[in-house]
Length: 507
Image 1 (cartoon, rainbow, N blue to C red):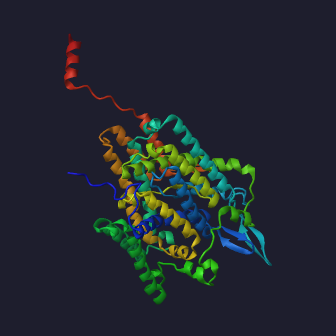
Image 2 (image 1 turned 120 degrees about the horizontal axis):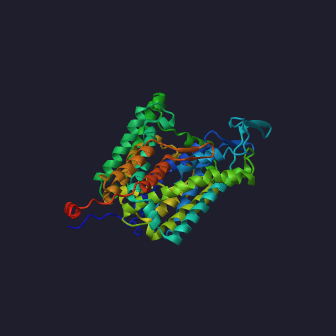
Image 3 (image 1 turned 45 degrees about the horizontal axis):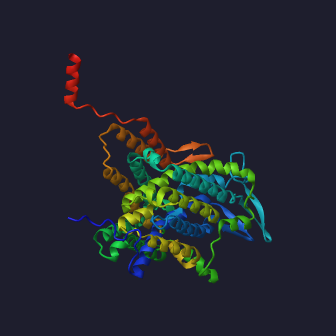
C-alpha cells in the first residue's frame, strides 16, 4: 500500500488558483502578525519621541517598520537559500532584553538607572519626556549579522559533521519541545485576556476557544480549500464572536467586561480623514532617530556596550536557527542543513537581521508559528511564503489594513496559538520517535530531563545588566554539555561469550 503523500504542495510547487494562493499567503501573515508586532510593543512601550512639535508613541511608530523589515528580510532569505527553504522571518523575542537595555545606553538616568524626564521645546510649549538611544540598535544588529556570516563561513569550510555530533536528535528534539511549551504561558495569557489588561475575562476565553475549535475542525474535517486555510477561518470565527460581545455588551450595554475588540485604531486612522488614512510610509528607525529631539546621538564609545549586549545573544539564536531548520526538515522530509545548506540559511538569516536592524531595530528570526502552519496545512510552497512577504510589506504602507489588523484581539490569536505552539512541541516528540531515540538509555533520559526542566522552568543566565541568556538557549547549552559529559556505555558482552571467558580464566 502506498504511503500517504507527505505534502499537498511541495517546496517548489505553487497553488493552481490565484484565489487559493492569496488565502494561503494571508494565513502566514496572520500567523506571524501578533508575535511580530509584540516585539516593538514590549521594547518601546512607555517611550515617546518628539518629532517637530508632535509627541509620538514610539511603540506605535515602530509597528509598520517591523512588518516592513519582516517582509524584506524574508525575501532576502528566500533568495539566498535559492527558494528551497519555506521559512518566514520576523522580529525575534530573544533580543528583547538586549534591546531594552540598549535603548537606555547614554540616556539621562539617576544613580539607580531609572530614566529621567528631560524638558524639550515643542513649538511655543514645552514637554517632558525621557531620552532614548535608537542608533545603538542598528549597530548591534549589524554585529549580529556579521557573527552569523562568520559562523556560516566556518561551516562552509569545515562542514556540518561536527555540528551533528554537537547537536544530535536527543538534544534538538527536547529543545524543540521547550520552544513550543515555553510559549504556552503566552498563549494562555492571551487567551484569558491577561496580556490585554483584562482580568480573567470569560468573553475573551470563549472567543479564543471558538477560534481554536474552528481551526481544529477545519484542519481535520475540511476538504479542498477549507482544509488549507484553517487558521484564517478559525481567527475569523473567533473575531466574529469577540465583535458580537463587544457590540452588544459594550457599545449597547455599556459593560466594560464585554469590551474585547478595541476599534480605536480605526477611529484614529479615519478621524480626521486625510491621505495618510489610506496610504502612509513606515517611519523607519534611522528617520525617527535623526528627527527625534530626544534621541541620543551616535557615539563610537557605545560600540563596546553594543557588542556585549548583542553578540552573546547571537550565539544563542544560531542554535535556535538550527533547531527550527531541523524541525522544518522533518516536516518537509528534506535536510535543509545540507540543501540549500546551513551556511546559506545562516547568511540569509544574518543579513536579514542586519537589514531589519537598520529598518526597525529588531532582529529577524525564523518563526515557529509559520513552521507550524506549514506542518498543519502541508503547504510548503516557497511561492506562498513569497506572496506573504509582499502582503506584509504592503501591510506596512496600507493604513486601513494596518488599523483593522490592530483590532484583532489577543484572545483570538491566543486560541489559535494553543494549536500552533502545541504543534511545535509535538514536533520535538515526533523527532525523537522518527530517530528511534532509546529513552530506556539513562544517558538519553538525563539529557532530555535537563533540557525539559530548565527550559520549561525558565532558567536564564543573567550577567548583571549586560546580557541575559534565554531559557531556551540555557536548556540547549546544558543539554549539549550533558550529552558530551555522559559517554555512551559499551554494549555488554553476550552471555555465551562471558561463559567462555570464565572457562578460559578457570583453566
